Image (cartoon, rainbow, N blue to C red; front, side):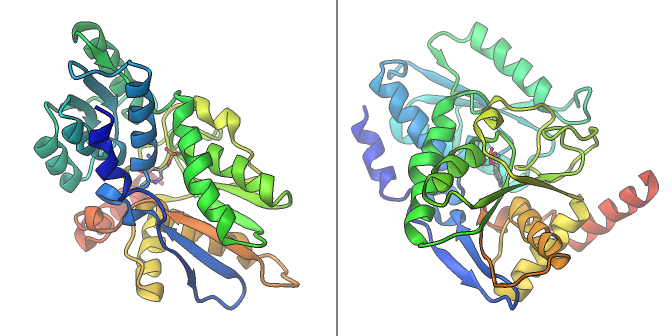
Length: 320
Ligand code: PMP
């Protein structure tokens, strides 16, 4: 069964790490949308499925069930297709319509949660739906990206090592957070090689991961309405909270200034980097890396759509 994953392996990892022009800092972006299915999330998806097959937890009879806002679900859907096993993603109304179309095309069935939970997000209700499905589906397997240590491990060995090998010295890494798997894996790996590096977590205002009050959010992929378990393993020096409208501005600037057409969490990091260093006296140009976990194509009806952005601006204006 594992042989069916070998072909996919060729399209995972070793993504481009490019320098972006900037006068005050040496800025580098790791373009994770060059992975299979166009996102960072194929790394944990591959690692989790492969390990479960090796342990006999996944067989040809298995149905994989997972809560995902899009990227992880799409990665799992593609890999389950190759493995010829069933996959049921539990999605919510925040999902990009493009992602939704892909999930409907590649999955055995899609479960959509439309009720927001007590925090204004969907995550808690999505996880409850997963529990229900697991109970009634024979031979079901739950990757559980929020708690599974293989999520963080995939980033420690994969992404973290790729970045570590690229640099002789590195001063800062800016990383968007949702399950916390990426920041946990990368921070551990990078601090081994660069003990003085500062790891800056980037989150959206309204996400509760770092203790802020919950608020409705509209950009998928980044933020969470609970504190994920993986975050305990992350070695974080600073946190930058970004407003959604600033994340959108960050996306547009990243595209216009550097030609990097990326998703909401990439724009959040780009904005966070500018805020972070704007007030800082810099004796030397620090070396800064950030991630672009997915591409902009999936965001053409939201982040890159003027009408959608104007609507969000109006809503923010009313609620503020
Ligand atoms: N950005 C995007 C676009 C994502 O899909 C994710 C994963 N949900 C993240 C950032 C955050 O990664 P993690 O879940 O590992 O914290």
